[in-house]
Image (cartoon, rainbow, N blue to C red; front, side, top):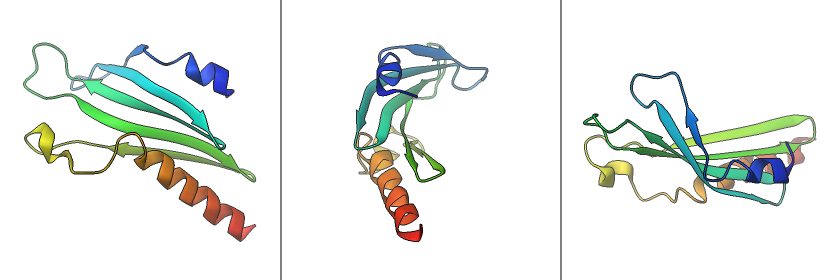
Length: 106
């Protein structure tokens, strides 16, 4: 996927077949150094007692390998339970580490 195509997803809402999180809001779409990334916030809907759950997503290609990373920031009871990781950098950092490992093996 080209970076231009990827960036067209920014601000879009994706409806998914799920009883728990039926809509995903895509934001912070970016591309840098052979990695495309975005933040996806799962929305439980207006009548749910659940809170939204952000996910950091990243994809990259190295050699003949596609690297896809998804880091979920799901709290146990409160949004503050999600920990201290950064939703903007976590998936990108993991994808780059995996791509570096692939490069060193080839």
